[in-house]
Image 1 (cartoon, rainbow, N blue to C red):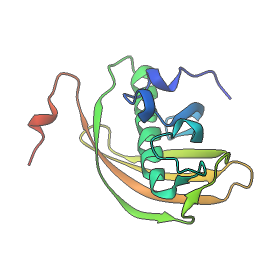
Image 2 (image 1 turned 90 degrees about the horizontal axis):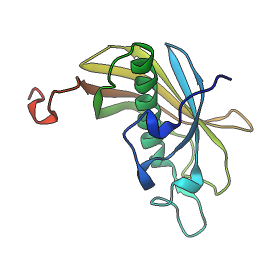
Image 3 (image 1 turned 135 degrees about the vertical axis):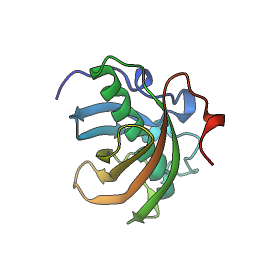
Image 4 (image 1 turned 60 degrees about the horizontal axis):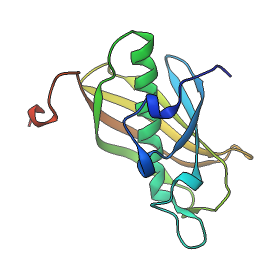
Length: 152
């Protein structure tokens, strides 16, 4: 495991919307992060569990962290990204129980700017069981460009 910057320095998510704990591994092809269920306060139920649909946000944030690390490696400013959608999203559970330790991966499939695709998964740390997976489509916006100027 390498030494990586804090997730806050790599992705734009701040405060209660920053749901990832730390970067665990990174390569040009894939980034794996821990999930902080305690940090998912906006989504936790009274029993401390988190609905499985939040996995989509875990995956999107991991893709953002991957892009942030890639930008740092290339000595360029990170690009803003807009989640366009997901395909083949499968949830194997209804909820993540309180205290469960999760790992989320974002594997870059194609695209460097504009339309970018990631294959993502959320796994239970202890068993390695895949709890959620899907393909995310993101549209990246170069530094200095405006989200209002996206093609229609």
